Length: 156
Image (tube, rainbow, N blue to C red; front, side, top):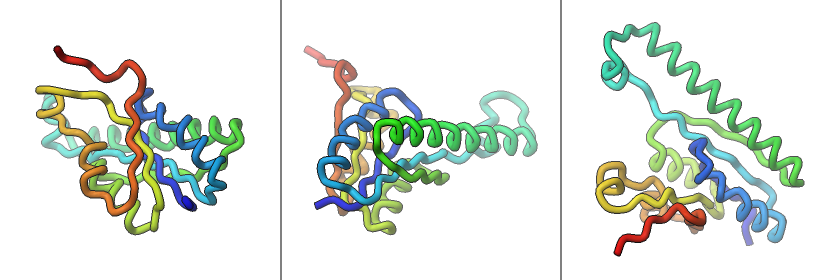
């Protein structure tokens, strides 16, 4: 049924909660391709100006460090999955997370996107939005959204 599964990860423990489910589905369905996707958000002089005076060289160094961190994170996660008996490839892109996830899944003929929600609600959700919500609303392929245990706040 599924031959290519995309697992977007943002580096958080909450995002990694999707890995256990993805592993079960991939093994149970004999999935040929499992892709770990990390989207690095772009940095600009405007974004960095909140830290004080910043020059182009500082932006370049910070951007390079974020890309290196993303590569290391993906390699570590890939190695962890391999220990569990699951082979996965890694992809790192730069851009807005929801847009990049949607673009990648469409261009690469992904059959299923598996991702965790972060459990935001109320004002936090309003201001920050939800990558998972945007992906699920606009995806042309099935999206499995997982709410990690204990992350969703219940309001009376």
